[in-house]
Image 1 (cartoon, helix red, strand yellow):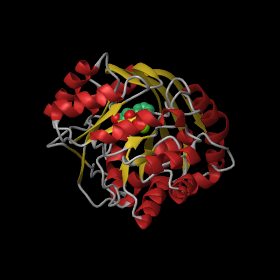
Image 2 (tube, protein in one colour):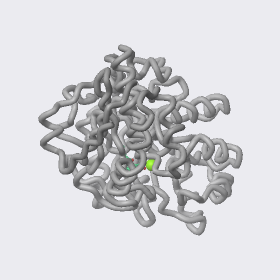
Image 3 (spheres, helix red, strand yellow):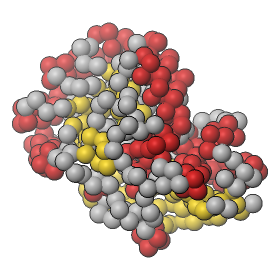
Image 4 (tube, protein in one colour):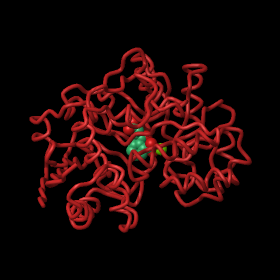
Length: 368
Ligand code: OSB
Ligand code: MG
């Protein structure tokens, strides 16, 4: 596409309820929306940073500065660019993968809309809908957690993931197992443990979990391998898998037997397909993670999750899981426990300009 400029916005979207993980509680989703302005029309992307660097080293103001100071100028210098060339242009800038992913998605969406081609088809989707799991935050106590989980099961979610942290793990997992029997259940620690907690983590083996997600820190790639040898529950890595190279290393070391793929964390949907492909070749199951995406990233995640190697339900929930009002005109809905893969051109969703304006707290446009 012939790039003419980029529009970046910071949005604040109120959450339907507070979302608590081992690293903190959010009541508002702060996110950056990217609009690629091209001679053939616009494209949309989403930079999934949060307000503070708690999930990873990236955060909104950092990504905002990186994108506007370095990345957007480098892309605009190119003039015309194809989606698969974006990563190469941005490669000299170390890290900041969420910023890279959001910019790449906007260019990709613009190109696919211009070509009249759906993102799912481009990525290699083989399903027209994907099973929908839900990520449940830490609640006041196990009884409250059981109530919240029960609500999601009533809505039809086919897999439950509960957030855990030290001291809020075994009783929570036991309560959900006791209340709902053999439902597909997994836990996510968001890096909150160390190898010193191995006895607690081994207790989780009793609950027949699908997996335990990211028990140790991002760079604990060897410790995860040590832990994996002592647990029956499969270890799935999220934070640690920052690239296809990191995925290859983790598999070679035995640090994970399942991988959570999030396009934001690894620098884009094209790198996500690379990780998918290498995991398929290695016989390793993958699933699509989430970052409380708006309708833009949620549509892209549904397309990605429809690739053949995504054999476990992802955190691809309905928009209503997090938001009462989305920034797209047809937010993702839950139908029979599934979310549909959009079939329109590009992302296959249209922006609601009024909602976009209402949630915007900062706006910057750079033109060639
Ligand atoms: O670890 O998967 C995670 C949200 C923000 C940051 C990290 C994570 C999450 C979630 C929510 O678990 C997933 C979703 O978007 O539904
Ligand atoms: Mg996670």
